Image 1 (cartoon, rainbow, N blue to C red):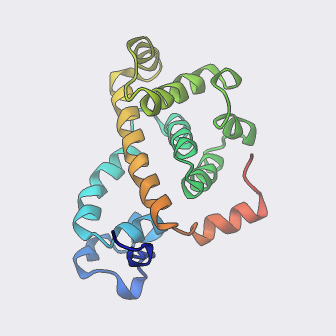
Image 2: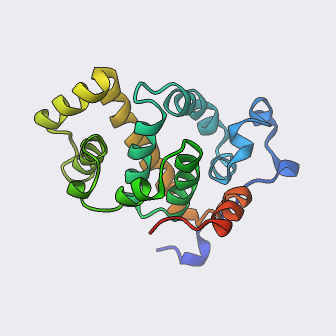
Length: 187
């Protein structure tokens, strides 16, 4: 069995070492966030990842605030400090209150009803590996059938990122760290 010292250390790739095959992604989301600078150790994966990321982050039928609730709950369930902090920052940029953001870490009955529906679907995916039919109906009523599918895809997407973040202890991006130092995230 390999020793832990044999495990690769995959830090974020700097601009100076950015892979040539990822030149089209230079200056995009891929070089804006440390998680993608780590994923750049696998250029083919990052290249394939980009269109899905674009859909889920920019064109999700959930809309920005609902998508943030899903991502925050996923980050919380993954115990990913990076994911939680990044998305607290993003949620604040969307105008979400700290009380609403903090509620995402708590029990469903302490959340606004729509947030509880979304967070409940995330929990179901973690706990039962499926969204049960009654909860599917609630999500569809809230966000449509495409929204339900986007929710499931978003959870899978951010579980993958959370696994990367947790496995490689990816440092928080400097701008987000500075913003959260000035205004700490809700607990």
